[in-house]
Amino acid sequence: MYVVTGGAGFIGSNLVCALTARGHDVVVVDDLEDGHKFVNISDLPIADYLDKDDFLDRLGSDRDFARSLTAVFHQGACSATTEWDGRYMMRNNYGYSQALLHHCLEHHTPYIYASSAAVYGGSQTFVEDPAHENPLNVYGYSKLQFDRYVRRVAAAPDSQVVGLRYFNVYGPREQHKGSMASVAFHFSNQVLADGEARLFEGSGGYGHGEQLRDFVYVGDVCDVNLWFLDHPEVSGIYNTGTGRAQSFNDVANAVIAFHGKGRIRYVPFPEHLEGAYQSYTQADLTALRACGCDVEFRPVEEGVPAYLDELCGPQQP
Image 1 (tube, helix red, strand yellow):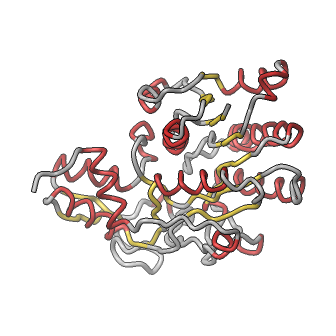
Image 2: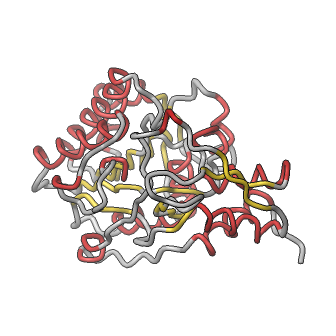
């Protein structure tokens, strides 16, 4: 039995899809207080669903259930970079992750969890090293603090512990995220609604729309998770991105090319994001490749059309 926490969320539901496609029994763990997320799993043949609090209770009270877990993919978190309630963020992202880690270590259950490129913050070097970790928001701090905890208590684990630092992930099953959905999603909606993709004007020395991010397709992210599942001898914390920074202009142009219409309009950079915005991210894949992971990552010119094919349907020539 495989468990995916946050399994009704964006990356989690795509991972559930990939695992069930392999024929695995999957238990989805989530918090469906926001019931809109149900659409992400309504088409998936899951074995069971548990609320995130009920899941921890059951692990502690049902020994047979606890022993039945083949692997845990811990994707559940509050991922809103604009959330500043640190008490909530640390309880949800840090404390819950700790409890689940200790269960997996005790029962020798592989534990593959979602970290984030947000741990790097204002750094210009994206290497899995404390010298380059400098988060700009409490979300990034919550992820960094758990990575630090893993380094301390699971430096040489008897069972697999893997942290994956996701960069800017985009793809299917993210519609519920609202303002936190990917720019590919928003640009597509904007082009369809009024013919304009709205990008930020230049800031921090970058030209209009030229801020750079490592945009990674969710299908490739799932392939990385499955690679580690298939290689339980490998543990550690690894960047998960393409290794190639691309501009917001690149994403907008890929969206416009897919729809065969639209243009770019630049809007003022929001004041509230000054000093709390990553204008450049690019995963260093040295460690990921050194551990043997050979998953290939699509550039936005390939990933965005693949996404929009599923989101909007294939475009007629």
